[in-house]
Amino acid sequence: SNINPTGYKNVFKTKSGRFEAKAGTSNGTSTYLGTYGTTLEAAVAYALHVQSLEAPESAQPAALDECDGLQLHLSATNPTGYKGVYVKRGTGRFEAKVCSHGQLHHIGNFDTALQAAEAYARHVQSLESA
Image (cartoon, rainbow, N blue to C red; front, side, top):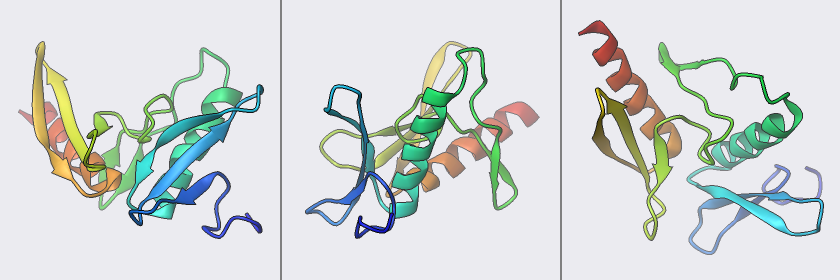
């Protein structure tokens, strides 16, 4: 965005130095999409949100993306942009967890959503190869 100092539409720097993504609604309010470690992560969350609004209800989330040879599991409905990655309340950090065989497994806590998504992808890959 040529007006926004972050360079991305609907991405704002917080007092803590992290970046918040918001989306405007038709009634003039804004929807909080999450807080992220980088402007890029916040911009991806906003883009995924917009994509989810434009996609037909039957559309699947975006195809898996890759990072260091890993297939990251993108989510159009999760504010972090990644399946299995959640913002920890009060800390702004990111938690990766997965449900396997009916049990929830904590993978770890991370500074960025991307780091948590990588850990999630590695864990899922290890479950699939076991």
